[in-house]
Image (cartoon, rainbow, N blue to C red; front, side, top):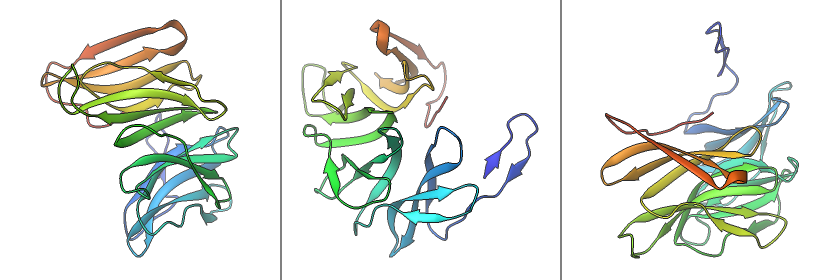
Length: 205
């Protein structure tokens, strides 16, 4: 559905007999990247055209392809796939076809977000000085070998780029406490706002 946040009016756009998640919206709002399990109950990434109602399948792997994001001037799509045995970050053309692996470290690279040619993602790391089951956020570029570690401890997940690409919103869990985190990328500043009760399970700007 598309919902008018001021009036509450909503309009149905698309449905699916299996799972369906909208992960990204084009800059002009006319195209959606949607994960749907339409073929043999295996999730793939699809492109939905809001104006025409057309649906185009982008990935065709007989496994798990989820969470597509527009990258590189909306000419390519970054997504998470288990095609190498564990979740990792890949990219392909907006028209599908050949797939490129983008990340070569970490055993479980999930929950990505993208802004043009920058991709931020959460990566599970083994035991280290900060303890077990650490998930840290990393920032990479599709145009170079640039990689930047953004967090140092705890479980940091679900990064979301701001509209201008200068900030990252994310969920941080540390010592049984859930918090909202914000990283100001151009200023090397980070802020954490702990919750008094409960845990955050999902978020967006």
